[in-house]
Every structure is written in structure tokens, then in C-alpha cells.
Amino acid sequence: MLAAILSAYPQARGTLFDQPQVVEGAEANLKERGVMNRCDIAGGSFFESVPQGGDAYLMRSIIHDWEDPEAIAILKVCRRAMREPARLLLIERNVAPPNEMPATKFSDLNMLVGPGGRERTRDEYASLFQASGFELTRVLPAGTGNVVEARLRQALG
Image (cartoon, rainbow, N blue to C red; front, side, top):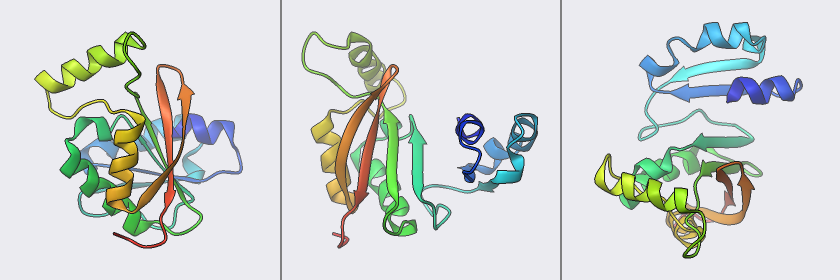
């Protein structure tokens, strides 16, 4: 996804961050896509730290893998790395009202019986953000999911 973003926005730079064994093979893909010169690669655990100083922190299908305490821990680590006017962007499914978006509800059931975690509503994302030093700004539809955007709250709670 980062390679696609950097390809679409030639003035942008990015940092690919994931577990060391995951980012190990990323350089070849980024070189092939012609964006390696604008991309840093960092390995680590988002339970410990993430690279500091970004304008935007983007996580795709990450928070839904975790129950609230772990999700809040991940978001707090991101919060510590961020400075105004940085934004947090989650690409996740958003649980809609009854009889809407059945695929999201099916995914939620799979999360409950499988690895743990769950799909969340807009209000549940707002609660996670509140508990981790963010404020929900908007939820935008994006393909089969949503971009859930948050900004920093002034004081960490």
C-alpha cells in the first residue's frame, strides 16, 4: 500500500514499519515500484515504539485484530510518536446499522471465533481514540472499508 501511495504522490516520503521478519523482504518490492529512494524501512513492535515525526500514521486492518486494551496500547504508542498537526488514519471496516454491510458483520463474527479482536462502530473507534489521546475527526468510505481519521488531543489522558 505504501508503494502505491508513493507512486501516486511523487513529492511524498514514507516509512514502512512492521515486525522485522515482515519488512525483511520489502526493499525489493519498493525498488521494483521505483519508490525506494523515498521510503525508509523500520522493523519493530507497535506495542513498544513506532517511528517519530510523521505527518500521517496509517494502519490498515491492524486495530480490528485486537481487543480494546491491546488496541488502546497500540494507539498510545502511536500517540507518543506524533506531533501536531499529524493525523492517524485507520483503514478498517465500520460496523453499520442492522441490515447494512453484511460482509462487515460476517467479518466481525469471524474475528470473534478466530484470532480475537473485532470490527467496530464509529462510536467504538471514538472511545478507543478518547482512551488513547486522540479525537475522532471523520470516517470516510473507502472500497470495502473506511478510513477512520483521528487527530491528537491536546492533553494525554
